[in-house]
Length: 117
Length: 112
Image (cartoon, rainbow over all chains, first blue to last red; front, top):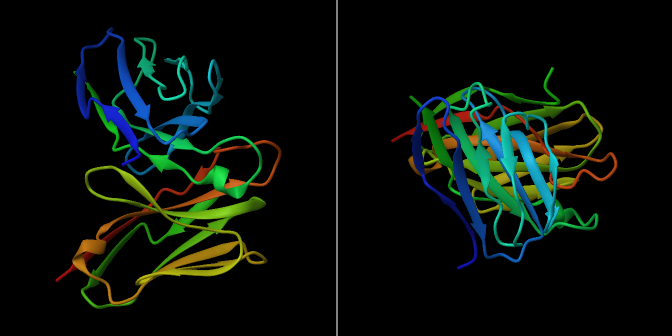
């Protein structure tokens, strides 16, 4: 079955450490996204990529980095520069490109919960 | 101010009750989405609509473009409907592929 796989599901990090969250999709989607979810807040966009080897900052990119070397993969690194990294992180994808409304239908992964100790 | 506002924030219902969750938005949109997030955290897209009404099983979504308002209805609610329901809007300005505005979600709990 096609879908998005995020790993790890739970991750604990000490302050000052970088961590990388994995996101892999087998949907042949062009566009991929990373969101952060905090209690009581809507999802906020960290980074997005519409095509391989290209990505753009979202609304809260500071302290995060991404890469898009393969269409299927969009890993997110939470760096030590991120002051409040404890959160639930969601990866998503969509068909992408063009202005077809289907391009806006997101498929989400199961999420990764990061806790900084 | 959030571009997408949902109400209520929390909703408790008895099994079998008819449920309505409301969503208002303040920007021009090309589509309105209803999403469901279960306790494990994963999110599923329920509906995408740009006008009128859509129905899937016991779920009905409506949108009124003039009033910038959408509702999600659940008929004959069941404990398995317990989840967070999230409203999201695709703005119709420029190339905003995938850049949705998200509401804060409505936590629904249905008791047997």
